[in-house]
Image (cartoon, rainbow, N blue to C red; front, side, top):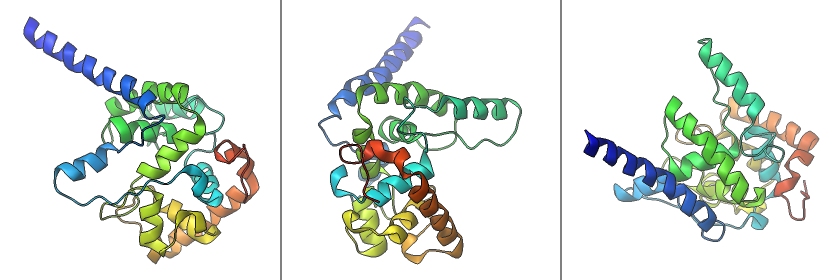
Length: 229
């Protein structure tokens, strides 16, 4: 029995130590995600080319923030108000959306697993708080845009996503291509921005209007705290 407990304790310690050590390292080292590693280990193709945040369209940055996490520049990795609402919905048996911030998605992609799980969500929260404590917002966004899955055939990061969908580089995105790319993020295995459905185009239009009106909320990821929209 003690051996089992000792083994579990060592495994838990290792799980805690990995993000504690790697998060500061990722300030200067460009990481790969767990889904990328999983594909590589199973012999599946992975397409990813790192791109600095300054070389990515401000329209895309604003669209990502206003679509995925409107409070990104204001919270400390976790939107506590949204998380509280989701917990109340879960306890009441109502459908929950997850309340995942961009930082929580980064935590999941770097250190956890995909799939709906209360345990995974519980682990995301302290990891996101730690990541936000260690990393500035622009680095969190830079990592997010370079590890997010953006296509059904192993395309990761905005470079691979923009090239596959539109044959463009991520610094050359107009409002239409930027917002259509963002509509693919919830389900990149099925949503194809290069062959956008009417529903995707409708959502892209909503994102564009929000980004133009509230783009100042994403200023923390712009150069010198400003976005050229």
